[in-house]
Image (tube, rainbow, N blue to C red; front, side, top):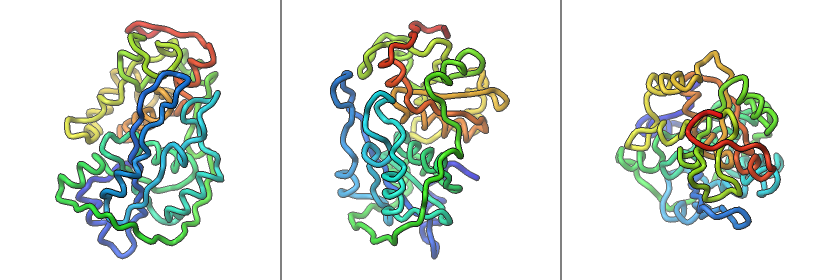
Length: 286
């Protein structure tokens, strides 16, 4: 099953008699120091100004994550809240889902991963998001579609997750990828969380390097070569974390395209650093 869909292919599927359910997950994080609120605009204003025809808006902070707390800034959502949000958006178990965002891909990947983790069998990310759609000649609309209530009931466990202890073990015996920017991994800057640095033993692998200049994921062969150079081949035990489990979902999307199974540490650095766990700095895995 494909994890991504191109704008041209989406145009064809959208014109079918029963197109996939389409979710708009535009979101942007405004960085703030620990103790403040890191959440940025929900994306609803952008959705209301113009979205892909047939799309329903989903709020990442309110519907794809639980409240910030000891388990991180974007912990797993309450299943009842998540399930209700998906059904409101028309998600059903027997109908494919396509998700998109403003183009960065992080928020769309979070929705993709959550739905797959919760048992939905067919979810894809629109590669390049709104920018790719409009570049291909696709139109936007302000019309909010009336969609029938879906029947999706989350059944978690279809994809692997890591807790903090599991991430620590994997960093020693397998490959734990840090999807944040390199300067955050090295501990040179930390704009959000209380401590700078990385999980000891983790490997720096910024997810921004998984995309080309046009914002679309690099070809599968290029991604596979990149991850293999980092020790994350298809036979390795691989995990991913980031700041709060959002950009790491994008790295997981790239790993999936590359054919590399991997687990997500949802709490990520926001949970790890707040708990006073060991920290490494510098460019080397340590």
